[in-house]
Image 1 (cartoon, rainbow, N blue to C red):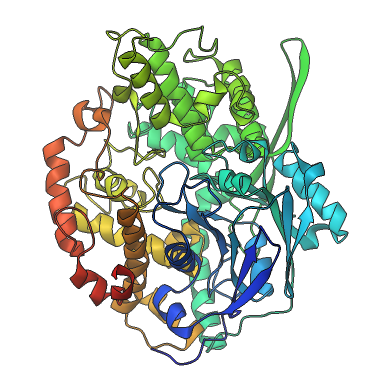
Image 2: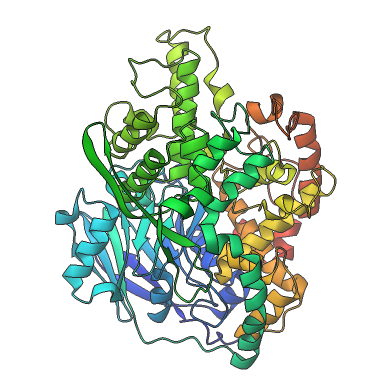
Length: 635
């Protein structure tokens, strides 16, 4: 282990105690940096050290961590990425949600590699962070403001415009909607910590926002020239590999994934929309008719962000979306194809409202789709809500407002699909709903309490085992689908368990560096390789092998698993998939017949646990903890 902290680190963790207003700067132990790298790794370590195993995610004992990595602010491309780390109100396990824009870069300049919010403020506050520390500012007047309004109001109050970088919760966060998100309205692009309920955790702490003002810290790589040459040499491949993102953003995936027959439709009853329907909500259509400008995170050449606008008369009233964030591919799956809503303007409106009110578009959309299938099967009715028919585009927009404010049936939807299913099952058992119309569990699409992202759990074998074992549950940022779409990993179970595990190492490494996933995959490689080794060594002065760099990711993933096992939410039993994925093959289209039957999942789990050196019950073995230098955590 190195004895000094590399100068790419700011060197301190800022602890903010919301109940007292006190702050404390903790020097980063060089050994902590060497073991956990930064970003995702720092967030997991802090949650492990400070959050009791039995703490409720919405209790003051939970921690909200904002962390950046050693590469943030260096020549390593696209590293203005931040990590929001916490125990999730959706999964009850450790969760890290990434976001971009300018906030992460600004945080790095303060010298605080992590900001940890402890406890709960007595009154609504926002937290202002400078290189000198943090102060709590009254936020009563911000109550009820949307995310963009909050960012703008705080910028005006602080008086230095966009040099104050704000990450804010919306009304959904204030109302502790379990999948409430955080949004950062940067000068060049928004950043959204979308999944897992970070906004709800802020709301539970009475924190409306965190506002960072730039400081003077400038990271100094150990070998700046070598890092520059490495990054410069990857620019041309990066730009070639990301042409679709430059043109369309992630919305460019709608048509190709639909053509594969692996894009969920009508709450995953099937996985292919008619080509003209997919085209109606495609990246190509956005580019032709609605994109007004390309937007980008700090120091990123790809500019995968887009702004979209429209104005029309709808139901006798003028309706518009002005310079809104373009719906991402995941959002189009959740709010368009899963709903059978192909009115692109209603989809834009629903997504813009999610961003403004502070809702994860994926969990929102998949939860609504679940409720609509429940209604289709008689488990819910118009008495519960008049907006539960597939194809109801106006209902899709209206339900966003109801969920964010927990109005009417929106209060039930605000709990997510898994808790809604449990509530319906309880009603059936109590005789309050008919018992012969269907099993709500049959219509769920997610894992460990989190709704699945767009990448098919039936049609992509790596995602089957990846979702089942993911520390975040239904997230596509543990195991990645990219190599499967590219045809570089065959759709077979052979070798897929190891593929999923090593992909999880890759993502944990990237989120600890911290680097944008698209740039990580497009410019540097879709697996841990020698280029990552050379970049890490050039930045830090360490002399790591490629295997040791991958082990950084493995160690981070393992501490996440350890937290979740300790909390009772990760086990062999919990490493599972929903009924539809295991028992209902894709009914038609190019991927017809694909699914992951129980025996197939069981076989992959056996291989996965063996590869990782875990126990048969899914817990991390003592030998693996010792191999990774984590044995002290198991005591």
